Image (cartoon, rainbow, N blue to C red; front, top):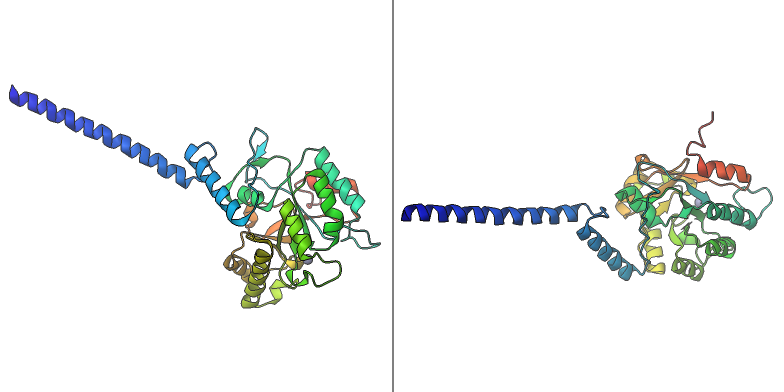
Length: 303
Ligand SMILES: [Zn+2]
């Protein structure tokens, strides 16, 4: 009888221990799962970690917290999005790279009136790299080279519509030349929320340089802007859209997260994050052509 009681007690203790152990395992599993899937919005642990990381970065780098998009009308990174690229926003007869400000305003107004969301580079990167959802009607606005008219003409229009945009600047030209943005203009725009990113030091044709020369212009332009603006510079557009195999290795080694070419098309992660296509916008385009490029993913494939 006594033996039977002891046996039952032992069995009960064994089951209690087993139950406690499995509860511990399940909790631990959840914790690991949460940390690994950093972009799962519906995990409480993730969301808090994510918020904390964003806040830490924002404090460190003095940048605004990125928007988190919710709702039904979202798209995921298997889909492409248009990255528009401009140069100068000013009129010059016969120069298709220079778009009159009235025309630029009309295009921006079209985006606003048709419910487009302009993404920051970080938002675009998080979409491509971590599949963070973005609104279906998302667009990225980029301007190459860093002309002073980007400040004089484009900036007031971007502010008027509350738009985000990215300027890829030739860092060797800052404060040095006519019609190129100055340090204080760059700081003011960055403070507002325009991303200032690299376009190399001297508008270098990267594919004509050795690997080490490429690495040097990629690193130097990045460091220069990071010092000037007090933030991380993670994005670059290749001058003339030129690049080769060394370029992709060098941008990675220099610490960039995304790089843009001038290949024509909507950007998709399958192209590779260091060779993303863009949509060219010319002064010669009528409004219909602007709309076609913005709304038709296959605009560049002639039928
Ligand atoms: Zn350029």
